[in-house]
Amino acid sequence: MYTVTVRAVFSAAHRLRDYKGKCEALHGHNWVVEMTAGVRQLDKTGMVVDFSTLKKGLMDFVEKLDHKLINELEPFTEINPTSENIARFIYEGMEEFCRREGIELIKVTVWETAGSSATYKA
Image 1: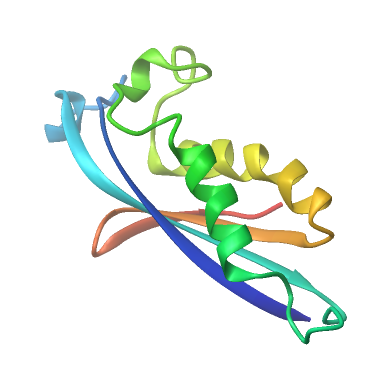
Image 2: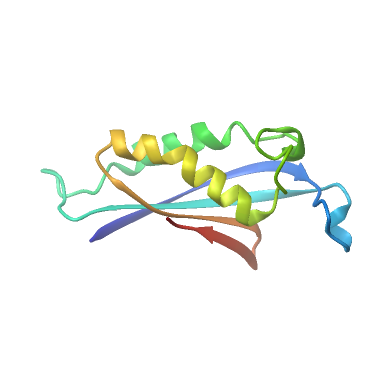
């Protein structure tokens, strides 16, 4: 399988519920999202998909989170806005986009900091 990965960045705040520690207080991150998609056979130009197409799709989706308090957005009013849950939210939100482009969504990784990330893949 051939894969490509793109990144998008957004800034948002969150607080973790049912957590004892610094992250139970309201705080923010400059989140980095990496999305990997792939195909078994390259298109006629020799690509999985144009990087700019994939990046625009991801950036359009994460715009919903940018400069927001994530706890106030569905489904995070009910589920904890952990990096793990945010990665799954973005993955599920990008599945249809990838299908329309004829590619398979492989995984989404969300970085809270340069040294801490969570990945979701189906």
